[in-house]
Image (tube, rainbow, N blue to C red; front, top):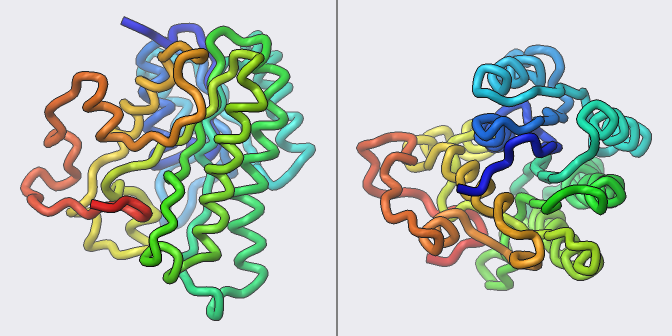
Length: 275
């Protein structure tokens, strides 16, 4: 079975939610996991820090490298990548997971708010990918995986919260462009997005807490990410992938164990996904 054993996986926003789940899934293979996030101290409302996830990674069988990281800070990103590569002997995989959410229309969007989500989502993805690329070129089966949606130009998705959509679609375009720019170096670049909402702090605090019962756990995204990252990088690149369809294509048929509420019969379809 394909494995990430001894691979170095650099994950942004890995202190909680989907990033944490991907970190723990990589750890189960015995990977070197760089837990890169801003949360190095406990948050009054949100669980997890880079240090608590590091403990979990070690307990799961991986080697943990917690690094405080602000993806908006050029020098911080460059130093973090250099430190990770020096400590682990290189970087094989970058997971662009760090993201900010704001679901408001243009007329209700303060420009400082837009600058924030753009600087984290689009610019942060570009900065981390650009900085990681020289290390990935020396990696074995190198991948960039960006958590961003397939580009859906349906009117229902364009009318509600286009400032956020612009930044997430920007991440997607970057990932697709990088697939072509780096194809000759054998570096894969793909996106991954959930079919249903995922039970994370974004759902609880940015959307509607009641949706947690209609969501899946982050484990489905972690399993899909693992399947992508263990694929030959020269055979899978430039794709916008969705967790459930991708896992089905790879032989999975049972998904009930991913339900956050086992009794739920009406899962909530995520943003940008047409049923």
